[in-house]
Length: 371
Image (cartoon, rainbow, N blue to C red; front, top):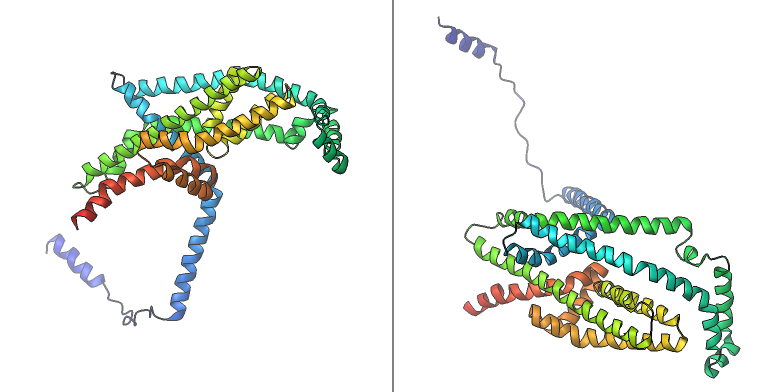
């Protein structure tokens, strides 16, 4: 007998069939206990996922901001690439310019801001005394003692030079604020660098998930959306530059110190949606108050008037020209985005609205016309 036949025979003899019984009836999925168990498991899973997302919400915010900045800088990178440079070289040039602006901001803005802030703190009691020269304000102070209360509080916190420290919650609070801000800025900078370097590869990878028959059209729409985000960033830079230019000239007219540094501060604040101009107005007014109270009031009124002109005239026109977004849509989308996601929502609202309009014009409306 062959070896293979003996092995087969031995195998057949060693195999025993066990009787595990007949299969029972399937689980009744219509049973209320089964439905309640599955629903409970689903709700617990959703709750755990929501808690996890909420815990990592700050990380997602940083990723969204970095991705937005990378998409916005991509048109500048592509423009440099068209001149014969590689993408790495183009990204290097763009980031060198960004780092130069950060260094210039630190060199021109921080020293006069600290100096003028100190002068404002030291002259604050005298400024409050000057307010009493106004008959109306003096009458209100006699009735309610507002200025006297402010003077006492100011003297108590500035007598030992602890105003800035107490404003940030102590020495530990100052350290936490500085470290947190530095870490956030570096994280956004590094993420933006990675995203803008790998943006073509990431886009190509995402397009592989689209059916091959629709891939060319989806690729064209994706490039158009990226271009619109870049146009929004360029438009925002233009608007911020105009605000900085106006405030620099306004500061020169008022005789404020360091008008160029003031302009750089306004430019940076103008890039921040929702609260940027509030910060800019506060800094501009405080610097003006170091001169006289009257100049401070004029500076505040002038800034508020310019912001209204920018919000309702300048911004809608620039966005309509560069993004083909109606002015009403610009304002409404910014309000909705801010109410939903705060600062990030205000940052993403207009480019998202422009992208939705593009999809409606290229996909939805033609399909409706054909039906």
